[in-house]
Length: 106
Length: 115
Image (cartoon, rainbow over the protein chains, first blue to last red):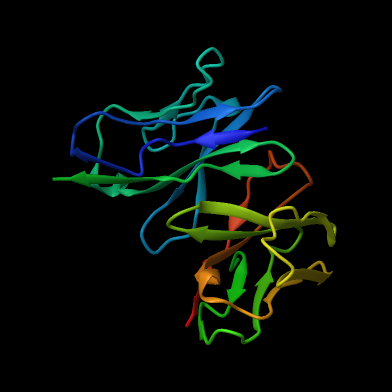
């Protein structure tokens, strides 16, 4: 069965501090993973996908097949990063984790 | 481009009433998804269509829920009869192509409250 786990419901960090949002998955095949983000009063939108190996808004995520993880990282958090973050796994359909609310405080 | 359009944005109804949520996908997208978001369960896929055909409705909670896509530019999600536990935000999303790998574009959601 494919599953996405985001262990933290809420993560609070200070501005300028590093941030890591955790995501673990279970999938029997070769996974395709994404991070979606929902800023306050905005639509849920794609942040990045692992296959692109890109950095978006300073965020990166590396697929670790050994640990079955796809953690989202940013070295220096900004207040505008405060949002709801969802990790998602592509299978027959897109399976989302329950989300982590990131709060960056000044 | 207005993106995915959902209506209504807010719906308050009483238990037992029929509720119909509407979605207009982005023109040219041939996959459409209905999700439900709650605090307890997060974002759950209810059903998705490809080329107007339902592909996977295993997420539909029970027979009270039904979804249709009569054409490429319109879909409905109906709850009859509604119950308080159906209160949630319902999102519609669309994408180009059949693969779940393709980026999904979300609507603003419909916040449903069943009293």
